[in-house]
Image 1 (tube, one colour):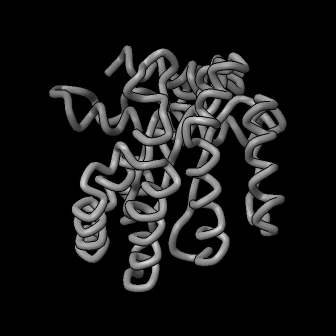
Image 2 (cartoon, rainbow, N blue to C red):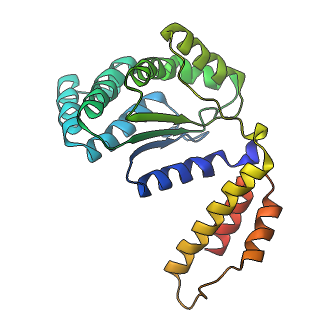
Amino acid sequence: PVTSGKTTIAQSVCKQSEQAGANVLSFFISRGDGARNRAGQIVTTLSYQLARCDDGAARLITTASQELRSPTDCPVAIQTERLLVGPLKAYSASSTIPLIIVIDALDEGTDMNEFSEFVDGGGYDMFAALIPLLCQIRCCVKLLVTSRPDPNVQTMLNNIFEAVGCDQRTIFKLHDVEEASVSADIRTFCTQSFADIRQRMFNVPTHWPSDSQIDRLVILSGKLFVYAATVVRYVG
């Protein structure tokens, strides 16, 4: 659902993964933002982030950029292969540091024509190049994609996995998760977020907010992560 807090969860995954010592590449797609809803921009952004966290990957990306001369004018399939797939192979072969790739809100622009434009504009080619690689290397690099249960998104990904002949994905449906499990995650999120606020602000009591106040916030949130996130942002 729109209010289930998929982006909040994606942001939390990024933050917690970094805190755990992983390298994180992320792209948050935004409906109506021409700079944040095209496959080519996803590839170049993730490539730039990868270059910043690994010297070996950076050298390959620099070489590819020079050889392609104008990477953004190349077909997305070529961009993905040269700027992401090759460097990710090198990363997985040389690094022991986990790498998490987060692509949030793949469904943005759920109108059929708009998503068709994303697919035809390189979205299919991007995932068709990435997914076989992830099936091969498995251990070091993981991809998280968030989306509403949009049939266009599901069809695209199903077709790619069928073509690849390898389906290592795990589908996690927020609306199917037990409320107790969601509540535990929301409680963890609130506890950590308020601890961060206490560190940033002066004269905040050590035990603020109280356990009962966090309990109340968890109850009010129900299964909606975004409710708790909105409260935290307002308070902080």
